[in-house]
Length: 129
Image (cartoon, rainbow, N blue to C red; front, side, top):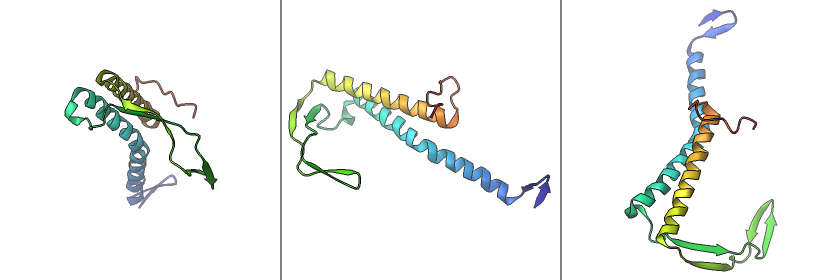
């Protein structure tokens, strides 16, 4: 172990650098998942074999059914009542998927920019948090 002005250099220095990289990776993995799913949603639009059989199925349900709260968790006693369900046109379904994928990619890029500072040309929108 080499000591220089109170800083000890040795095996511990490598551990700190490794912990820093692992910590950085753990902090950005969530945003990488956002980007990955956003890319998949966009690729679904351009490559129809990637789509699920219910790609264009939509459903809107009512959130006001009977519920109980246990330690802060809301539990539905009955399934929600479906107000509307059906199939969207291919054009609308593709537009929704394209918009959703673009939104997820934007969240991922801005999140990675906030955590790592890379890429520098993207503004840090979350700097206040």
